[in-house]
Amino acid sequence: MPFAQLSLRNGFAKALALGGLCLVLNGCSVRKLAVNAIGNALAGGTSVFAQDEDPELIAQALPFALKTLEMLLAEAPDHPNLLLSACSGFTQYAYAFVETEAFFVEPKDFREARRLRGRALKLYLRARGYCLHSLENLHPGIRGELMLRPEEAAASLGKENLDLIFWTAASWGAAISLGQDRPELSADLPVVRSLLERVLALDEAFQEGGLHEAMIALSALPKALGGSEEQARVHFERALELSGGRSAAPYVTLARTVSVANQDRAEFKQLLHKALEVDVQADRDRRLANVLAQQQAEELLRRIDDYFFASEEDLALEDSELLDAEKESP
Image 1 (cartoon, rainbow, N blue to C red):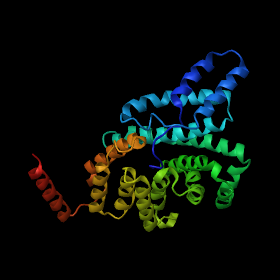
Image 2: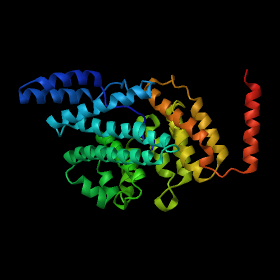
Image 3: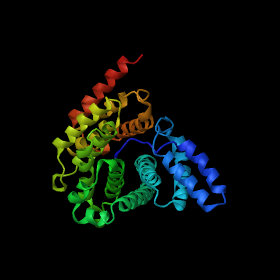
Image 4: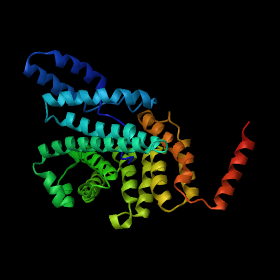
């Protein structure tokens, strides 16, 4: 899924420092005041995680940050900013560093890849739980309404809940994508669609194209599941426009979904090479997301024969392109 660009809720360095102080305070009421202050600090700012270009460093740092969030939630279980931070944080960690690791590991160790996907699924469900908890606090009974009448229930949510709506859909959709052997999850697809379409109706420029990146994957589903290749391409173009061409994720998402489904090997290669051309330094808030997307693009190109039945003409053309590249190299 790339359902969004990577960015934990923020003011996090300050929040962690306050968190350390909070844990040693003796007075329960004082602790809760401190926790509330931390939760409010997490509501804004720019993420140092998203701006980093060292995925390994962030992969090692995020578990501590996420567990700190859960420690704070133990003191203030209904704090809206903490709940949203946990939901978005666990979703992004699961995608960027657990599910993605499974993708890289799979050719060498299928059993380990399966284990990692199972772990990612649990993390997505944990994230969804935090989002639904927050939604229930704001709109009692909303979970049941979403299951019974998803479009009507989603329509009742306003712009003030935009982030919460999006991350509920992102975590839920990611869980569905990994839990395809679990009918109770697959049946929830209309809920995810309704939530994302609600965000689209409220603010189609949400996350400067991040919403449309999520809609590419949703629209690329088979027609029987409500998908539309035409709509996937519309969302792709809009994602590029809103990101100013500074995001590699739309190229990777369209390649992995539509190009593979159409067995369009040439388009697959073209899109992934476009992803690799994105300047990682051009947008610091997308830096980590772009590094991760480009790593996936490189791996997909290496494994291209796993996704396509290559004709002799395709292989001959690729050999010719390789020879031309070798001649042009110094």
